[in-house]
Length: 478
Image (cartoon, rainbow, N blue to C red; front, top):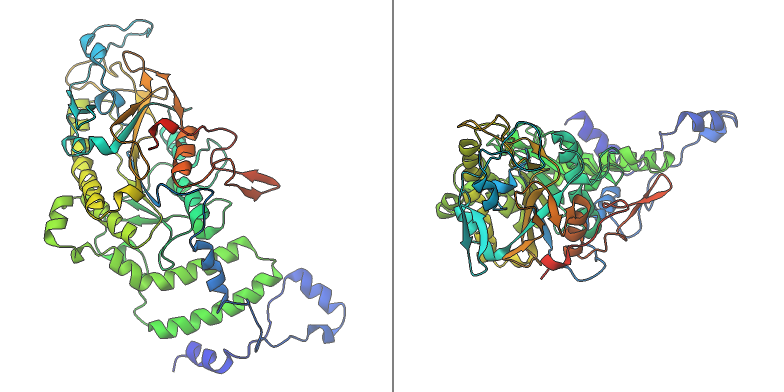
């Protein structure tokens, strides 16, 4: 019998309090050795109504009631990191194409107008204009609401990427996904409520984009590298090859009891609480996550619709996670920083996401889930309407924080809608301007929350996702 198992068997019902801070040790020592007597834990009622400390922690993920009826029960955030060009994707500008190669009034400098090399077509019953690079998404035009008047603060990739995900330029704050799970909880206690999928390395800003910051650690996103095909590689140490589940359960219960007593001495230290939550979640994920990420269990026809590509696999995993009750799934689909060779590079990147995203929308619709699932797509800022290298076959676009596009589909969204507008060339948002805070406020509203009232007290202040800003874009809500 292993020493750890023998210890559990002999002492699981009779553990002594061996934990104290240095301050407590000095206090007790000053009163004599009699003060160092330790009370047995046998029969102690740790948490009335629960079976263990970990169960109490994970109850933070239990489903919760929002401020008003929800329109979207779950969210998929497809992050087109790198900043896609809005005038080549979702914001048609015929006037810009007409001035191609010419200086634009008021722009200054030596850069000339770069008209889009792509045609826009009216699609669906609504006649929503969508670039030719998205033929599959265009089939779902009547489900999509495009915001053409987005703008942000700073056109720097890392700063703007974190800003899009957290609403913060400087202070590290909880991500959109963390706030969503904090507010609504999760429908599956055996998987994280927030999962972030990435086909490779970390994006700019790394874990800041899915962190819970000062919210309890249980609301932080779990980052998964989907470029690794085996679940054992995607999630390190997902399985223990040396110890059975039953033995792990007994060991974990012992650790929970010891750490719970230790946490009482430390007055519920947040880092220790997060570690306990991680232990419990890791144990439960051994069976649930293994199934959720195994797309080989899908019929061949379904896998064929999504495609055997990085984004195809991510989108199929996303649908499986949503079905299992995960509240918020972030899907990284980067590579849109097109300073040169715009025509070929953007078309290639659009092709990567077009089919899989279209398949996800159709799949959710077929399963009766689209009306309760909010899908978001967009980058961190937009691109200039002038050439980054004076035209030619290799022409591209520079960074632009004054205008970009973002679309939403599904749960509670008024499909077939184009909201807001940029100027005639697409350089700046001019009508019904929408800031990142406004987008976040709208997402919160679709999830059933007044963004001004979903708060968390930290360092003597009530924080919220939208800081002191944000207006709900009511015209895109059905």
